[in-house]
Length: 90
Image (tube, rainbow, N blue to C red):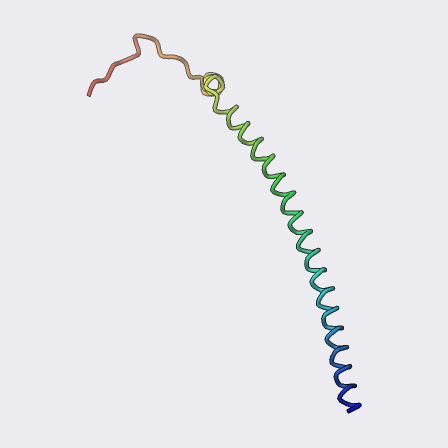
């Protein structure tokens, strides 16, 4: 009967140790995953700021007055003279 008690005690001790190791491992994994989610949230915030900046830049470049100025300055485009305008009917 003494050996049965010793075996039970040993099994319970192993179960407690296994459980403790499982708790430590789970907490470690939880911390690692929390750090990863925090890093990804920071990256998402940075990308959101960059996206907003790019939208503003795109809106600036798409302004008709800016397009007109670029066409006149870089491409040398001008408004056509009235005699150069032709009406095409289909």
